[in-house]
Length: 198
Image 1 (cartoon, rainbow, N blue to C red):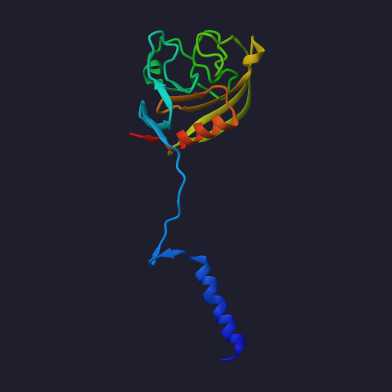
Image 2: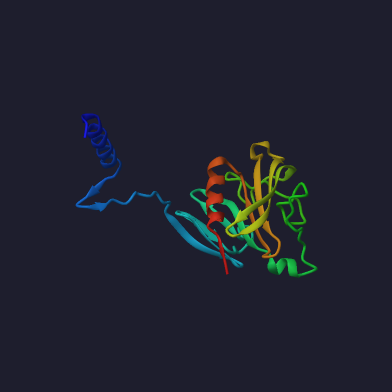
């Protein structure tokens, strides 16, 4: 065997040794980064895990915070709602969610309001416009939801914001995210990606 072949064989052995790490003959696991899990929430047939520190109000005395997800000082950054009962009553005052109408994220029959981190339900200004800027379909766990994103203008211009909506018409589950931002979008997308159904 020539010197050149020996040098090449030695280089291959050293390269292979550099690519693996072991202690006492055992491979070391690759560390993974996971987000701390918060409360588990059941909305209709949907099960989700909220971020650590978040809380969910299924129902409040005045009804203003029904279905609200809150985190830190934010009173209602999103709503997770089971609309099965409301949609089964033909006399219920409800507009079905739809990405095909300007205020499609709002199910009430009164004037929509501009809920944001700084303007919680009951304190939010009247919404004056709702321009659909994105629509289509997005996943909620294994299901596909009708999706829409709107630019919302408000009587108090400091409350102008974006609203995102996911609607599962068969399961009758509505998710609305208020004051959408890059950070809150990532959190909500992660929560919905992990959703399961029973």
